[in-house]
Image 1: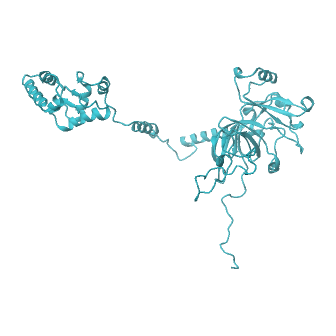
Image 2: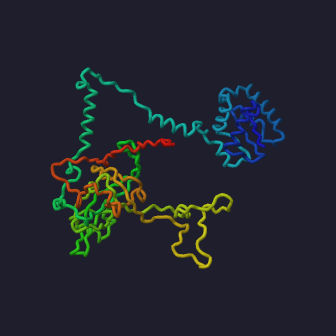
Image 3: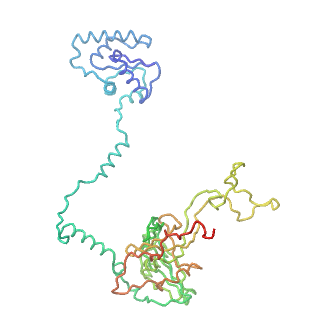
Length: 455
């Protein structure tokens, strides 16, 4: 039980209940049996001094009556002239309690005493403040003055601004190849060839940037993976005469010199290219070998072309057989809790588990290959927009090359540049190129009669 003596003892019940709730609910309740003396003003302190030391809780009624008598006598002496104003509400009483500098606390730990002196908590929730800040950021500015539109649209200010905006878009749409990729000495030695049946081009390296959705001309949505071919250079060329096979080594990105190996630095210095982040070798035919230092672009591929993509999948941690190996699971009707279990792992007579048995375990990272179709290329930013997903996380390296096997026959109607794209001087090429428009509507289904005429 907590006894509060002083001028608060003679006040109405709501104020005393609020103070008790403040002491017990928020700042922690003192041990039962302690006495807290709350002086409200100089007259109350005088009354507390006249009353003497604190008494037991059983004599609280007598102490309250004596304190009221002392307060009345102090009021007759004029001690209320410099006193603090009397709190009118329960909240004012709580604030006065927290702001009282000379509160006498008996049998109360220092921890509870410090908690009483804390300032009151802000009544505005944090989410309300965040909502107000968000509304201020999203608040639309005041409407500007509309330009005067004359009868002649060519003379109006709004039409002139619109024409400037359209001209700016036209300038961004088309660039010359020299502006996108400045010509170097190595590109002069590359000549366009007519491919043979055994001709095989080199592939490209790219960083996986993320995924997005794009719509074609018919309004169909496609899931797209964005890949960036960052500063691709030919670091080394291998021929049959020198190495026994023909291949091209491609360098991707940039890595600081401090993080490079000495052997790789010597190779970069010999090739005359900057330090690369990733190196990979692509097998090519002898007629598609590129010179060292040649810069490759995304125009190496044609939109609408099928490509062969390889990469390393993400790590999924410990997974069960249903997610790791695509098991169907067991019965879910009237059996035990074996719905996602592997089931039998072998025959009884063998007495062992054969090697290669698919079980639960760590899933990924594993090498993955797939066929993808190029939806769009952006030569200005060296971006490839691939239909579908690609293995790996954001920032991982993926390898893209021409389609293999039966899929390569899907590119029979596409004229690919061999050995790579070689720009011609004076010709403007569009920066963004999409795949060819399909001739049929994907949302148009053939009409099928509900019943046959002879029925």
